[in-house]
Image 1 (cartoon, rainbow, N blue to C red):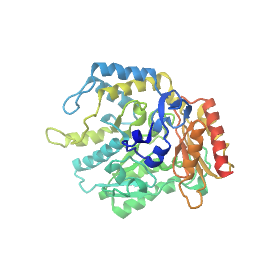
Image 2 (cartoon, rainbow, N blue to C red):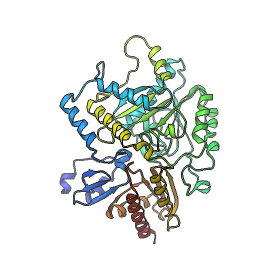
Image 3 (spheres, rainbow, N blue to C red):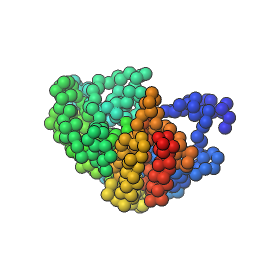
Image 4 (cartoon, rainbow, N blue to C red):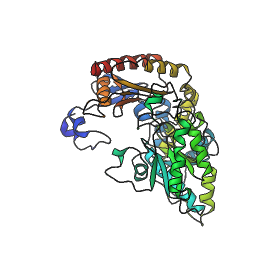
Length: 440
């Protein structure tokens, strides 16, 4: 396409001027591979953006969307309903841990986060704890790009131009290269100590002000940081002790990414509220869902006057096409046994882990992090150009037929759960060449 035809689209999270000088255009996708506009086949080791967990263009999902479009293309969700949205809610509740039995539909991870934050505030308001309006999040945390999400974000670039409008303080991130570099799976050191920092923040602000703690079970966009052993359980204990809600942002970890439906099941820690999106529809339709504990719903619903209990929602909440895509996606996960395929001790996960850690010792590589089907390789920053190395390795790999995601001085991988050993071999071989190209 000519530069003229590219000018109107203001692209998200993209260096627009650079892209339009040398565009990377995708024209089709199937299974593990993209097809580019010049007909190259590129291995997708990012599952789109952490979302196409069952691979691309799955026929069962495509047919479900097409069939729904011919039957009920849209239905309003304010005061009206359609059967499929209730069936999907029951199915999600049955898959969720603990008492996360209430499902509120959104259209993205960003909307799910803002919804979860509002639920936490509404819960405390209904309980008479009107002073609880503050959130604790974490450095390097990513919680979408709506105003609530950037208020609790731990990534400076995501909020420096927009401000942070909710009262918030942040835990330190959990990365510790001195103690935990090149960990296979969960880092072994410092989990409880890192979590205990929450007690310091509570003492500083007082429990009467703090509504909830929001964290990703595994930090994603902030660098792929699996939690140190014991960290999440200790966070849960501290929240319970101080009557503070725990929100897990499972937008990237949900639907098989860690070997269970949700990471909360993998790590045996049940939050009060959980955000989802991405893998819910395999990326085939925009949709998110917030799963809330019965105690959250009951407090809000039972302490409200007659009429609307929760003044929140979206025009496209429970969109029929998205519901159809989600139901079909859940079919595929179950029928193809994809949840278990991502288990950290599974054959493919271990093969992936071994391949990744074979890169240790290459020039410029300072850390390798992985858990199940999530991984990152971190590099030495270039002199005078911090944050540039990931993009260089990403570009080199793309030119060799491999899509990775750059995160500053690291590259991240979140492959579809259908990945095979041949895809691991291609990835490791390409990465090795790209690293040597830039670091000698």
